[in-house]
Image (cartoon, rainbow, N blue to C red; front, side):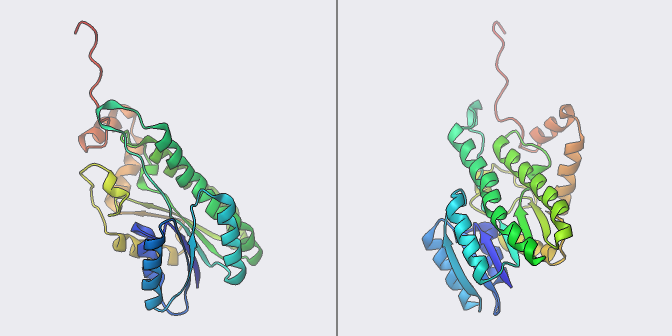
Length: 261
């Protein structure tokens, strides 16, 4: 099985690389950190997999496309996992997200996923086989005031994946959207506490791997948190926002004091 994983140097991406590493597997691992990428490659080779490294930034569309198409010509991709992502948390004290952080989130989480998926759509269609998985988030269901741009980016990926699924299914190409809750990683470390029902990266990878093996269109977990976020999305803001505030994910600043108060 030939598998490409972006964001393979840490968190879910690293755990998925280890989970899929076995004799007969060829892994195309893409990340920006050469030291971490080399380390995970060696681990996967020790487990019997063949590994091809891509020291790339997913926001570099041209370089990424060249690498993906070259890999696909030599090892037709069976499974593509667009996992690379970053986050941005609202600063304490009521300051807005910086424009730099917003741009970084949108470029990586949206453009990076599109840059990853687009080049391999036509080769998969021509072969009438292949599977594409996009890592979104439970934050795609309902915007969280502590991380607006991140929620927006993950909502975009969820919608994109759902749309591609409907379009590509007649071509024999499967598309899955993955919406995890809190998973222990450098990304999740940036979120404030509490982090309800947090899973290890290895637990998340096992759940994702099972879901992909079953060709599930939507893989969201853990179940209690997934149900809770879906319910929040159905509630009016006047009800949903106090709930988010109570659980620590509402606005992080006090309302302004009226003059003369």
